[in-house]
Image (tube, rainbow, N blue to C red; front, side):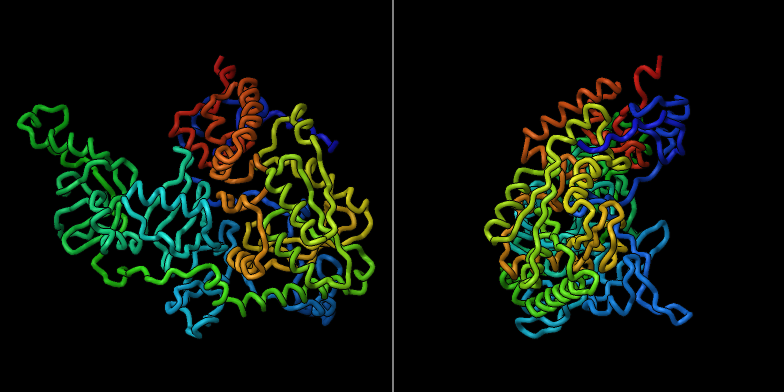
Length: 612
């Protein structure tokens, strides 16, 4: 069994942006706690999500560069290799990034192209089918864009039909681009345009959809305008501009039935069209309308001026500019069509990654080291495994799966069967029940205290070669998260004795990973088609709450086991059911967004015994 971490020290008063979660030590100063919950503002942007690489514990921080130092001596890399030695490796695609304010990383490869002739996304400028030059599409950071698939289409369809009674995006190739947010947040790209955003709302524990200006214009075109008419709010003509403004009751001429507070609506005002967010249900609007038009309005508890000043909706974006108008193409390409348009670029990426692998394993110091491929059952390690099979024809290697004991059943099954079907030597290193045994003597892991990685991964990793120097091919990518943004081509793993990690696809984005998978026709983990963006442990506290909610739907039996534990923990720590249900258990120290959420949901962050 893995090493048991010491109990956390008693809680101390923290800054208002890091309020200690109750139940993890005695909380001091009830007044300070109330003030923190009352005064916290804003929300924490960005959620790194759960990692799924089997070479656990390597943060991938780069400590070296490729240039010569000023004294003429070759600069050594963190793994001890010189620039000349690393020059034997293939030059990876340039993926520069800049560190901005607030430790934010900016990636320069924040764009793709779109072939208007074939209506397909491109990872290079020229379409491989028609030869056309694609339009450059700039992406929101971190630009780790991917294809929508399976459940993603179902989710988009559900929200489109619920809100607008039609789905203009049906059967189109859609891309999803993750962006910073309180939880999982994705831009939807169709025909090269960002048409909307899917955002998981931690308050209602469900996704919400909001169109962009261009996305809203789709619903004003035939054949969708008739179906979506029940979502169109009409505003009278005004002399001032409306963008970003809250609109009061007296300016609204039509407000269809069925609109709910907080939902997006389509807006028409003269020759202007766009979208906004409802501040009131339809019932509330008509109640205010009735009060205002009634002769008894003057006698109302609200004055006539107050009624007229009631804010009904916020206009997000509205314009008559034709540049925002576009019709979706009649061409609805298949994934085979998309691959054909990108095949030359995919082959080049694959060749480059294979050269990286060959160059690394053939370095003088590495020729006699055993080679392992860290195979987690996820998409990235799947690609690295396939690249290794092609690159290391004359060099034996073994696929290693670190079974944490809390992996999805689908992941365990896929890792085994995939290697068996390809006759790839497979070694499973299992943590057994170590996680559950540790859980009996220690509080559960959190985002800021992930002891599970050591117990379930690192201990198994260190048993793999028992300190004997070895190579591990790993699928980590720079654009997965801030923590991985600086991974070099090769780096020693400080947490696994003797392990030298090689990252052949570190500069790839998710779209390139998926293009490679489809080009090679590789079977992949079915969880991706069931709504999982990344594959890791099923109860990982570092995953999105959205993924946890999806896990509850896919595997209710797993959720029941975990929530039985959480119920017992909640009783012991005197926290509410809502505290658990909305995912507060995932932090040891709550970030501002969760303090704000607690305030909105009226969830007390103090223990009941603290009030006595």
